[in-house]
Image (tube, rainbow, N blue to C red):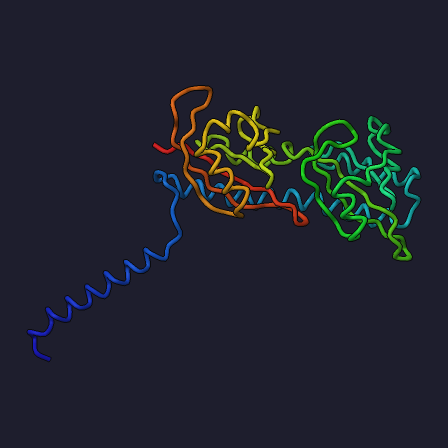
Length: 280
């Protein structure tokens, strides 16, 4: 080969490499509009998603075992109450545990402080209707439970030794306590705010505890920020993504923020898990 051909070959190769790099860059997912800490935010988010899912599944697994044991004994006897009491003490996020019959009436509740819930007809609640119809495990959204506070209910069907559906066992769970056990240590010492919301916009957990329980689309604090509203609509509508918005808290100076989120959940009920950071 003539030595004069080498410069042309080198030039062609350089052009091909540049084109390949350009195409590759076009196919990459959109990055957060943030500083060099974006990778840390994504790493934290993956960690939160995994550990929240594990925490939910651990509660669900213990409940499933108790429901299986209940199938062979009297549902309102001493042994059944003992199983409920032990289950209620298995996780700090569990407030109380109940047994509900096949008609949707609570027939046992433990600890003793919640015996007053016994006899309550909860058949009108959406998650109760689901489990009575499908005979499959469910997790509710945040609801006002008959015990007198907002909570999430995780329920597992009870079948007798003859495979007859007898009702279900349920954990009444404070989601902010369960999530705090994961998010608190994970985000401690970082510049990130962690938020977990339902798909209706209700805040289940926030680093700023004052925001827990807020309805994103109804609170005036959010209503005054169209950019925040737009970001919030995306969060509840999309299972994962990134967005940027400007937000001024308490009439202060507007701050540019970036949010990246993904989804955790149980039995078809989804929680959006988000990491928020200020953008310089």
